[in-house]
Image 1 (cartoon, rainbow, N blue to C red):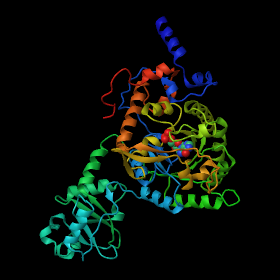
Image 2 (spheres, rainbow, N blue to C red):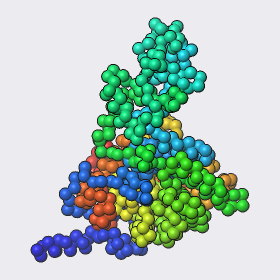
Image 3 (cartoon, rainbow, N blue to C red):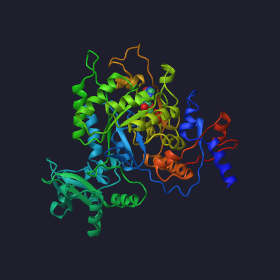
Image 4 (cartoon, protein in one colour):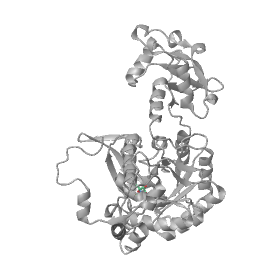
Length: 522
Ligand code: IMP
């Protein structure tokens, strides 16, 4: 018994809970690599933890990961991939309001497994033309819906007639006529289109394509059996897409603090955009700026809250308790924490401000708990261990750099000296500000030589898909939770015990004194 008490006392002395650990270090700013977490007695295996997190009423994610609202990170492709994995993407605002709306619409209308814009052919085309198109555009398929000039379905051109020997014939001569083509009305897809299509293929042996039409028989999409089989297989895996009450993928959008020529906020414009976003089904808006504890951000959040009482609002960025209070009082549900930790960020160098991220998270978390709002840790995350540490204080993380190399991020792949890269730039870099994000950093639309950039333009090596990057990150989070005996993210926050590490401790934490032949990734 005495021994047990001694052990408990020792653990308590060295491995301290957040309050004791951070308040006794109030003279120093700590970030991820400065601390490590102590293990705890566990009955939890990495497969056991639940990663669900409720960020606001009507906004629950199945993984606590959000892709950053940056123009080299999140457009519809990224947001779709994030939501399919159970997370969330925030569509950036460095585009016209109309373009941002159509990006959100793409995410909200996305039906997994449904090819929404199938390549079509027309009845007048020759089979030779179709073969030429397949070769030129390197299609790996040769079955096409046939539509007339008004997009009405007139038949299906099956792959087995797309052959050189029929090159001179027209599509009209070779197609399977409309009456024999299997279709389903868009309105009949129901809440679970994949299950509907899956059942159709089971009920119709030998049929591999199902065409979706609207009430006027206009083409609206195409299911293929191979896609549905792949998705049904993946569904049995652990990840659950993040959806709204109507079974649509979740999607967020960032808002620009639009200014009038006299410098005041253009309330009509930003509220108008929020209204359009809400009409398109947006689940959360983010008032994203470099300094959230400022009159303009407060004003904007207050106005949005007044006009849309139920809409979840993310606001930031802040690193002080006062900043959290201010945005929570203005009506934000989720506060974005991080000033200066971003991988492309130079705010601390240029302006001399910002707080190392883990200390900032602790301070913000304390204030957020009082105000009953959530916080998200934004920036500086380079590995899954950082996420585990962040989640001991915050409800979710926001990542830019970790996803910027994925094929789902906007931007072209470029080859330099045999290696492939994608562009990744800070929203406070000169080029991004010129493209529209200047207001985020408190500048007008004209970027003169006097404006100091707070971000750099960079390259990221092209990485695997969002699915594969997230699989590694989630695997790491699960391991961390297993080590701490935490079945839920709430338990992770309660069970975290910290110790500061020295530079020697940091060296010890990474592979050392070896010649690495293979990294940890599968
Ligand atoms: P990362 O995940 O470390 O690459 O950081 C991404 C985060 O950095 C974003 O979510 C923003 O909060 C922040 N950020 C984006 N652009 C800039 C910039 O130009 N300067 C400072 N911070 C930025």
